[in-house]
Length: 133
Length: 186
Image (tube, rainbow over all chains, first blue to last red; front, side, top):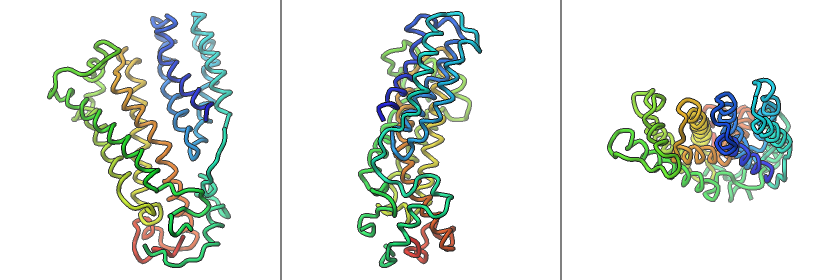
């Protein structure tokens, strides 16, 4: 989970970076960071919980975009370029950190459509009595 | 064991227990209170809005074109959303993931779009209006934080519906929690 806490902070940092690093006048760079920041932070926060930990992977393409953005969008500001590549690399790397999963979830999301899953096997083992409450 | 505690098969805990649900309900109530306050400003019931960091940012955002896209101000819609989340979080007992899947799934579906719209509005603040609104950011954070903990319960209900389907019991009746299908599937 720590990795996703850092990613959430990085997302919030992107929202403030332009004002702090002094390139807020450049609309292209600033808009890029203001769009990606909240989205990265949201995906990271959603993946704090074990049942939705998989959402952390949605940040992989967003991190890769930050890595490439200075060249695709043609940044002409060194601080912004360094910031975007650095944050992009960190977000991408940290998105792959799954962390500990301590509880069990009946086989997870794929168990909603697959057969022979943990929840189905466990359910067939339990006696069906007095469940009418 | 799962009969007493309501733990879904293959799970290590019950996602519908009050300990799991109360924090979400409380978060939704806080979101409701803040959104109501912002809506009162938008409806001109109160003249000023609390803004500690961004000067006239809140004022700019709350009176922007985006906030008036719909017949009622966006914070009022947000308040309704939080109220629906709070109600959907509180209705039903600790076995509701199988006794009333409809409310659990409605709850999960209500939490999702509210979070999505909140994040969208956060993006629009600086991009379209070059301003930030502190309390709008707080409500957005609340709605994002609610998504994760609401989803585990929905997962338990969806897995239950899958077992209902595999057992060839009426999914319609199980979804709405008809008495006659209760207990036919664990």
